[in-house]
Image (cartoon, rainbow, N blue to C red; front, side, top):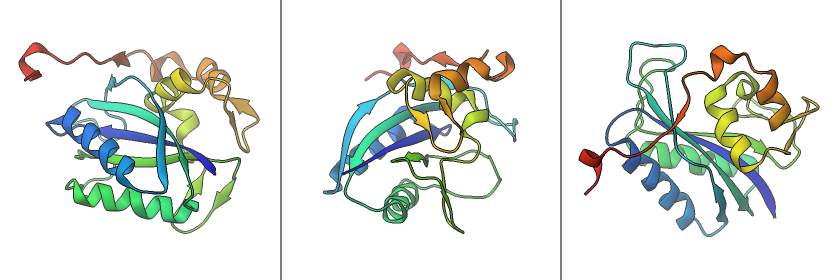
Length: 170
């Protein structure tokens, strides 16, 4: 059994629905079992900033799939939920990124594990730290908690646990 962590992000309404649908679709895959889910965090956009805030979270999964097949599943879910790649770091219905896969440290044309920018991103480290603070990141020699402590405050300051507004509840 392989252990992996997947980051989810969305900033196109209905944001919470896209997160829920992505988790449901991952859970329906026979060779994937969702083990833990972080809280949902609201985060400002990074890179291209002229867009709505994101909802981000991280899942821990167990899977029988090799990493490249897991990537295929993640991309199929993105496509099914209407992901369009128009602007780099731009608005999206859903984004699924494999952060860590076992203790692998690999780079192919399609996939880099661990995720190459995860150690610089509060919107990844904050939810990951919630569910796996002692996870050692391959190739970095640090735990998630240590990476988060070392992350500049600027990268963490506007990340807040998200609470659904009354108007969004049905």
